[in-house]
Image (cartoon, rainbow, N blue to C red):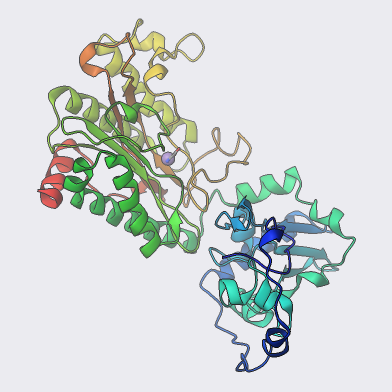
Length: 466
Ligand code: GLY
Ligand code: MN
């Protein structure tokens, strides 16, 4: 398909040589003969009242200030092909507009005597009398299907709407109004999830669990293909697209030594019986909330002794993190609990050049980090690494509160060419990642329904892929 006639603001045409002029007969008739489209005003979606509360929090934190939160625009992939659009997470959080958000929209807070007037500006659907309707490949309904109207979105999201052209020309400086303070505020606003967010995260985890079951069911086909890791990725993608919106991040399908590369997303290797395979994947729902789960499985269905030793040590580290996680402790203490196990076990195995105590020394130690270089936990929500702009004292040094959702994901990774470890460990990478909700007195494992111990993993494979 090629765009014709008219370039759009977001993706200028680069294919002028392919433009075909429209003959007069087409131009004379194209705007006529269409049934009227009544403005539908749906009931407000579930997240509307929650988003309204978040906007109120922003309004109260920034009295008298004009605030503009942009959705962001389409990003050109090549010529008239764009990357899939995903609205900025802060914009989605404050509007409740998820996968269906319109590119180039703006949420505007205009100060008034009591707080702010809040308006969502976007380019509503073009009238069929416009050239945009039939000739604009980015936003024309002839090309991309029905687009939203102002009244419909106002009812759906429970917010006043206006056409983007009514956001006064010359106000561009106001769009630059998303400053560091606001970015930090909206990131910290997301640290404690509301009821709607928790329900979405539960649902995202549930769909993700189904995606992992799909992978196990397809294990014979995965092993049979020379790029089995790609088969894993595509099986999970099918579940993500059919039951959700997309993956919340690129799937890591890492077999054998690839499991030691923390963000292995090339996924172009074979899945070999006798190796472990690490799969780190999460489904993002239409609301944009995502799960983030990792399971590591023996491809042939049975852990070897050394694979099981490493696996159960990672599980022990995860269990230690679960045991300390509760309101009132600091986020970093969850990590410390897991790292304590990692240091002690690697010291026991003779892998560390120092004692566990020496390795755990905050200043002089850290030798065990060679085998688990990443953190144990990160907040989870609309972004897989949620709340990333929160201040350190609110995040890493912050105190856990009920309603926070984060991962517990220790691992052990012995790279294939790491001469510091006995040969039998080399090429083994294990991570176990669960998503947890802080409750009144501990944490709830949202992914508890998924097999987790070595024995459970073996039984899972037998049940689904035998
Ligand atoms: N799931 C990828 C990560 O947490 O970095
Ligand atoms: Mn993670």
